[in-house]
Image (cartoon, rainbow, N blue to C red; front, side, top):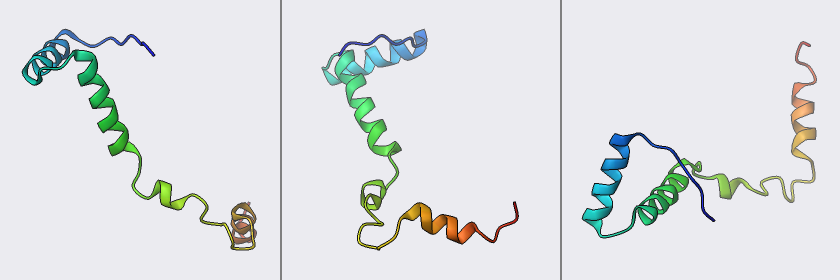
Length: 73
């Protein structure tokens, strides 16, 4: 998929320089940066938390509602 982004001239120059130093295209450099960003930004433990209520015999939302039933409105 192709996309277009706008960056300021200083960042453009820095990316071109880095791409030349590494011997890769700017597109490759940006793809690597996005991959790195997504790895860092996705909170640790997110994958491990999926299915946490499986086998508990109750719904997580139901549990939350029961905990909050005594809270003032």
